[in-house]
Every structure is written in C-alpha cells, then in structure tokens.
Length: 636
Image (cartoon, rainbow, N blue to C red; front, side, top):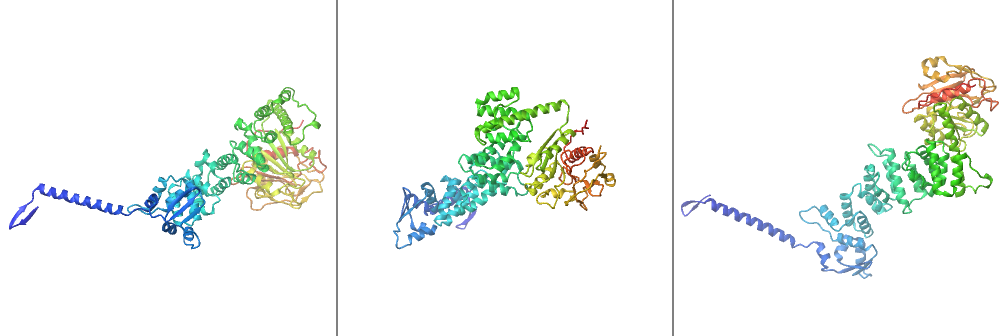
C-alpha cells in the first residue's frame, strides 16, 4: 500500500500489510469477548433461586422450604399476589399443599426468563428437559399453576407439550388430563394425536394406561376420522386390550364395558374370550349374547388356553349355539374344559363317550344356576353335540350337500313349527333350526351362519324394528330371506316386521285376507323378462293354499326395477314376489304370501298333496347368495 510522508512516496511491504490484518482480527475478537462479558453481568433469575440471594419470603410445601422472592411470586401468580399483599396475613411465610417433587419443579419454572440470542420456546424446552420433566410431571405442574393462577407457567407447560407430543407421549398426556377441566388443552390435542395414529396401538400395552372412558372417546371420534377411519377389526383388538389391563386396576364396570363394546363394528375371535370373561364378571348379558356366536363359529381358530378360562355359563351357551362351525372340535374342547375345571366327573364323561348317555335323575339335579348345575348342563350339551356329529356323519355317507336354513318365527304352536321344519328336512335341507322371534331377536353373527331364513309370524315379534334391521344386515351379507304370512300384516300389533328390511321388500304390507281356496298361477310376462326367477317354480306342478288360503292383501311396489312378480293367487293377489340384489345387497328377499305350515299341522295350511314343500325349498335356495348344490328330494 502506498503512502505520502515528508514529500516522499513510500510503499508498504507484504509483511507490513499482514501484520496490520492480524492486529485487526485480534481487535475484533477482543470486542466480541467484551460484549459477552457485558451479557454475563446480568444474572438470570435462576441465579437468585440457586443461591438464595435477596430472599424475602419462605414458601413451605410438605417438609420442604423454599427461599423465594416476593417480586417474582407477585409477578407470576395472582394467588401469591393476593396472599402477599393482604395486610392481615403474615406475608413472609406461606404454606402450600402439593406433591413436593411437583412443586419443586414448579418453583424452578417460576424463575424462567428469556436469554438473548436464543428463542424463548427453545430455552423453556431445554430447561424442562434438564429438569427431567415428563408428561405426567408436566400436567401436575400445570395443575399447580392453574390453581395458583400462574398463566406464564401454564404457557411453559403447553410449550413443552407441543414439542413432545407424539403417539407414545399422547397416551400419558391423555391419561393425566382426563377428567381435569383445567387441562382441556392437553386432553383435546392428545385425543387428536391418538386418533390420527390409531393403528399404531395394535399390540401396544401402553394403551392399557388409558381410563376405559377415555379409550371409548377415542374410538367414538376415530369412527369419523377423515379421510379414512381405522379398519373395523382395530376397534375391538385395541380396546379389548385396554379393558383387560384396566380391569387389573379395577377400573372396569358394566357401564363403560357396554359402552366400549357398542363401538365395535365387529368382534374378533382373537379377543372374544377376553371379552366374555369381562362380560360375565361385570354382568353385561346382552354383550355375552353378542360374543357367543363369534366364539361358536370360530372355535378351531380361537386360542385353546383362552377358551379353557371362560366361565361355565359362557361354555354352556357356546356348546348350545347353532353357529358352531366344527362340532367335533367343540365336543373335544368341551370335554377338556370339564376335565380341567372338574376332574371328578371323568367317569361321567367316559360313560358319555362310550355309551352315549348321561346318567342321573333330572329331578335330583342341583339348583339352576349353581356350579354343579352348569356341569350337568354342559354334559348334556356335549351329548347333544355327539348325536349331531353322528347324524352328520350319516348324512355325509349319503353324500348330502350342505343347505342350512333358520326358521325365524313368532309362532307359539310347537307342532306348527315342527311341521315346517320337517317338511324342509325331507325336501333336502341338511339343517333346519328354529329361532323364536317372539322371545328375542337373532344376532347378525348367528344369521350369517345360514344360507337362508324363513320368516313368519302368528304372534307379536319381540322387537319388529330391530329384527328388520338385523335381517337387512344379513341379506346385505348374502343371506336369503323368505317372508311368509303374517310377517307383513300391518293391521295387528307387532306381527309386522319393520326396520330397514322394508326397504328391500318388493311389496307394501297389507291386511289379512282369505276365506276361499286359491291356487297358484304363474306370471308368464314377468318370467319372460326375468327367466332366472323361474327356478322358484321348477317342479311345482300345483299348489293350493287350502280351504281358507290365508294370505295378506299385498301390493307390488311401483317403480322398483328389481321387484319381480313370479306367481299370483288365482284371485289375482300376489303369491310369490322377489326383490333381486342391487347395490351392496348380495342376498334376495322373497315374499311368499302364504302361511308356511301345511294341512298336516293346521286346518288353514296349504294342501299337503300339492307342491308346497318344493316351492318352499326352491324359494329358500333361490334367495341365498351362497352357492349350494343341494337338490330337492322327492317324497317316497
């Protein structure tokens, strides 16, 4: 660098310039160190807490005393401000009653101030992590802050919460904030986090930390999660684990158990035994009825060890249930259950195995409902299973294909019901069971184990609307429904089925009619358009409703494209109508405008010498969406 000195021009060498640059850098470093030393002159508030300098008030919590500063307490807490400014109180000593560990952390947060060159939120987060604050402690501190009206501490806790909230910590935050109105901020956001990651809790025992009511609220909101709710099986799988773990803490009761199970779209066979144990323990009878068909139809897949732990009542109901999918497995499991719980009855089991009998005088049996009574009832249920197994083996030897029918009827006359059952068995149905719908309604799980259902009434249904809803669910799942008289009689009390099933009916309900003999007449025009429907009339050479031909004054729905009139009475009244599948519905709904019993059982029945049994068989086979090779068996 050139310079002018004393009339002469001088040029600096490279070494001179390097020395000047070094001196400049040293000056800058010294300046920065000076600024840092200036900042260190200001002591943070935590320094006063740590050393106790200038303390002018003592706060005692449990057995621990803290030497604090009035100006900090008054600045941060309205409650402390009221105490310290009250002339009538001793304002240099204060007693509080909180958990001492929580209060100690609270005191440290009272002395939090911002630090230059660093974001305040990050400072708070680092400080709380250094103090080893966890979700539970955070909520406890926030509760103290709310009680003492410390708005700043509440904000600090929310900062920590927002930075640490994830699928794991959300469980702890929700557990601590549940039923705490002051912690609504934490509760709402924790629920949202759990809902968004609901699938992550499958198999996670941390879910057992949540109160059952909190888990139920999570499930309720998860049903409406957007854009897509969790898969149906997850609700039962995750919640049932929560219930089992909460029951260890005696936090499960009939109310929250029933609420939880009402939120399950379906019950998984992996969880059904755990739920049965809870339902029996807490007296949730309706929920037991829902679990039994699931266990019965999935016995081979259910963990054997879990089945052996269920109650005698649950085992009895399972062995009696029509939905048993593997009778031989159920029989073996039932014997093992008895031998495990009551080894002393082994001689009776051996006798049943060998001779097919259960000895004992029924009049001398133990009082109903006792443990001994359940033992004998389970033995008889096993004996009944043994007989069914033998019968099925005989049917298999005759190469009979499977065709299962359930008679759902409000019918008080046993002979009448038995007539319908026997006519169908002789026609070629391999299993025909009876469900008394005037006493209770079948479950969906039960209905789905049959190909088709024959529905009729001669008395009031137990709950016509609920019955119609569950039958609608079944027909959507592929079960065929054949509706006989007087299940569409809209003039008599609760004899007429209602609910969602009416949406699928091909006709409107009507009043009872009859008084003269009527016969079947084919509707050729409709059959020409829908030739497949002619399968219901295959082999039906004649059909008479009998001397009275009791039926209902039904009217076919107008504008229902899937509704077909297959046959009518000789009077012109509809006899056979069908609603073909549409949308998500897989099964068909057939209306048979006739009483299903024959003249063998009733003066008002269809004439047994005509083809009523074949017509019934054809309609039930046509209605189901499940393929069956079962064929009509001609009478000898």
